[in-house]
Length: 455
Ligand code: GH3
Ligand code: MG
Ligand code: MG
Image 1 (cartoon, rainbow, N blue to C red):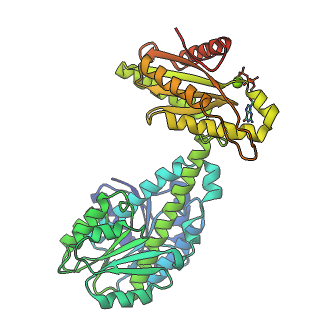
Image 2: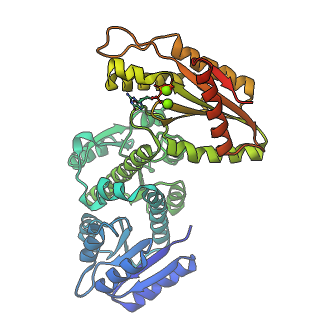
Image 3: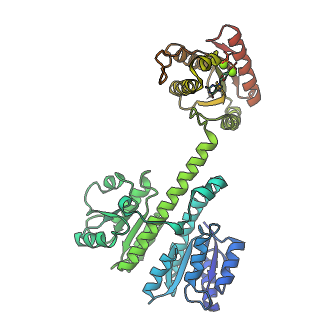
C-alpha cells in the first residue's frame, strides 16, 4: 500500500526529515513550506494525505486545514496535524478544524507510519465508493465531512473496560456525542458487540481478565462488526501490542492514562468518519439502484439486463455451459388498461413481477424489457429445466387471478412465453433475444397463455 504524501512545514530541515522517513518506506513525497503553497499543490496534485505543521507564519496549519476541509473537491483528503509535544490544546483545535489525526514532534516512526497507513487505507475504500457514485448524486447527496453535526440521541458508543469508574466518567464526558454502553468483559463479549450497530467501540487493551486484542481480531472477522470503528487504549511501553492492534485494522489509539480532551476529540473524529462513510455508502446504493432497476416493478431494467447478458454469455462461452433466455409478454394487456384503468394495470405489472421473482432461482435474472414485456436469463440451464421454470411462470400467472386495490372483481391475466436455450459457444446476446422473441410471437399466434420453445 503506497501513497502520495504532502509534507508541509515552514522549517526546511523538518520537511527533509519527514521526507526521508517516508521515502524510506516507499511513499511518494511532495513538499511545501507555506500554507498558500500547500493549498495550491493540493489542488494541482491531489495527494492521498497531507502532513501539516501547525505553527507557520502567515497562514497557520489550522487555517490551511479548514480550507482543505471546507472545499468539496479536497474535503476527502486526510489531514494529519503535526504539533509540538507540549501543545495539548493544539491537538484539540486541530481536530475541531476538521483534521483527521495528529502527530507530535519529534515524530516517531511507529506513530507516523501507523497513522499514515491507516488513513490511506481508509481513503482507498472511500475513494472506491466515491468513484462509483454518479457525479450528480455525489454532488447533491453527500455533504462534506466538515459539515457533520453530532446526534447524541442516535449515537451509540461501547466501552469495553474492567474498571467501572472509567465508564461512569466517560459516560459524562461523551454525553455531547452519544450514549455510552459499558461491558466489563467476561464471556460472550463479541456477541454483545454484534447485537447493535455501534458507532464506535473503545477497547482498553490493559484489561487483565479479558484479552482485548482478541476481541479486536474477532470484530474484524464478523460481517456486522468488520467496519465498526475501534479505538484502543494502550500502554506507552507496549509498542508491540499497539503495532499488532494497528495491523489488525484498529482505527485509532490513545495512550493510557487517556487525556480527557484528547479522548473526546478522537471519539468525535471516529464517529464523524463512520457517519460519513455510511452516508457515502447509502448514496452509492441509491444511485446504483436507480441505474439498474425499474421504478414500477422493482425488477432490473432493460439497460442493466442488456449489459449483464453480455457478461453471462461470456461466462457461458468460457465454461461451455448452456444458457437459456425467456421472453414473456402479458396477453391482451391493453384490455386490462381499458377495463380497469392504467393505475390498476400498473398494479397488475407489480404483482406479476413479484410472482416472477418468487418463481425463479437465485441465479436467474429477471428484468422488465419493455411495457408489459419481461426477460428472464437462466445461466447454466438446460432446455428441460428452463421449460419447467417457464411453465411454472405461465401457471402462476393464469391459475390465480390478480386482486387489485379498489377492484371488487379479481383480474384474470395470462402470459405468453418464448424460450430459447443455446450452447455457450453458439450464444450471442443478439441471437438469444431474437430467437426468444420469435418464439414469443409464435406463442401469441398459437393462442396465447403458452410456452413455445425456439428450435
Ligand atoms: P398481446 O396479447 O398481443 O400482447 O396484446 P397486448 O394488448 O398486451 O399488446 P399491445 O402491445 O397491443 O399493448 C400493450 C399494452 O400494454 C398497451 C399499453 O398501454 C400497456 N402498457 C405498457 N406499459 C404499461 C405500463 O407501464 N403500465 C400500464 N398500466 N400499462 C402498460
Ligand atoms: Mg402484451
Ligand atoms: Mg407487448
